[in-house]
Image (cartoon, rainbow, N blue to C red; front, side, top):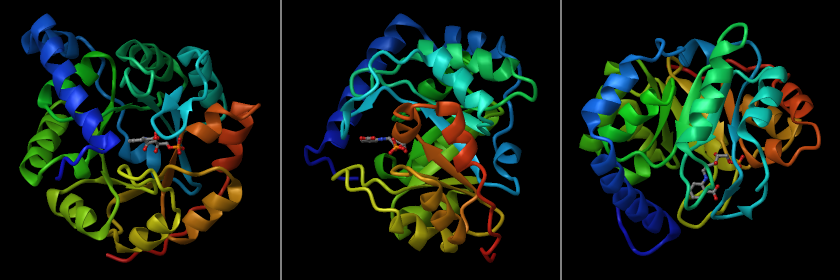
Length: 275
Ligand SMILES: O=C(O)c1ccccc1NCC(=O)[C@H](O)[C@H](O)COP(=O)(O)O
């Protein structure tokens, strides 16, 4: 993990500083009590194993690479559209300074997703570096968290996975190359996200998923993330053996969010990965 002044480095530094402040304001004990008041987490793995590609639909107002593209988006209204379109899971960006999200968005979306007929799991999408943030996610209703291998060493990854599972939640463990994939598999990750976006350069390339997906053991769930815009993109990724896709910008910018979730989720899964 090198910190040479990329946007990713700035995000990690800012996240650590904000975390220290939040921990001062709300001690972990109080957060744990709030976490224990939540209904049990909705399991992510079964939600993503289906005959058709599962769509993890993301509430995303903006990003460092694309700026603020949906400033007025109301998280609840967006989530309702995604649920109506048949999203298998919802992802909520909670980072404020770089992605214009919040923990309030997470709580609002989780309430809606859990109240829908056949509850839908919700992922906290942020830069998680410390167990405190996982407890915080659970306290705000999340069923799963994102863990990014590029910003964690293997001991941190093991510790954060342990805390996630101990709270009954699931982790989407994100990788971008072969070495990060090996780290995720060895750590026991059950859900592996292959990010087509290089978080240091912002280059987006779907061939990253095409290259890495066939290397993931068949007993793990594979999610292709970022840069997915069309049914043709999903068909291409399905041929590489992915189970699910995580889509943000294309859904947020679509004139009919419900219809695009439905269309992207109509592609059949191709079971072609070996053990
Ligand atoms: O989206 C960014 O610009 C970004 C920059 C730095 C770190 C992470 C970033 N994005 C997080 C994600 O991976 C995406 O929100 C997610 O995969 C959806 O991507 P997209 O469908 O391309 O909006």
